[in-house]
Length: 303
Image (cartoon, rainbow, N blue to C red; front, side, top):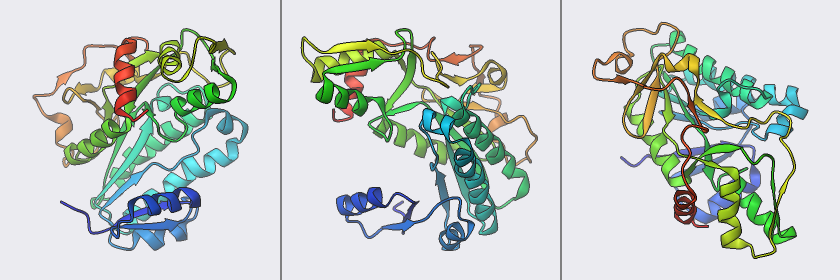
């Protein structure tokens, strides 16, 4: 089914102008606004919105570490504003797009996203009109802040790539894969679930090697600079505490049952045919793939 209207709500003027010029689609309506601004949110949400995809956040780990109050205003207060407006205008479904950094967080970005997940799931107990769910994933190749454009830019400018730690691993998917999985979770979810993408992971040094082979030369260097404040060596998509209430939904997704009690509309979480996961933690250190797969993902992403 083709949507009648898609509202792109953000404070990123340049990004909106570039999208409008690229797509030139009358279905898209671009609205400048900030999720910190309740009135601006209400002005959009009152337009008979069926679905909300919440992706707005301050995301750069060092920026969030250095500006904690601003991070809280956007990532927590902004999420609360969106939830309250969605309830007020009886939106049918609200999808919070979360991150692996919300799992066992050690940095402010992760903590705020973890709180965002909690308040999204708990919002199901505030209304019967809106279904609230979360989708959790890792890095998307080519998205804002992705390491791939960063590495390419480093080669082009200085013919070197900076690596924080040789043991570091991260989850990755292509943009098209992530979008397809997001829509799949939208269709298959009911309310209260956290859908977790089943993502491959890679050593960051191997990712650097693939980028160097494509964009570098024999003189391109890898420089080890040490782990930055707030960084993990390995990311986690399902923690040990969550594994006990996690199930295999299909080959692409796990689902995490909420800790709080949600009414009987949440049927899919209790289906008898769902198999429990067989791991105690889903970490980027336990799902490592080789360079060839990342090279394939890179080409699929247009790099």
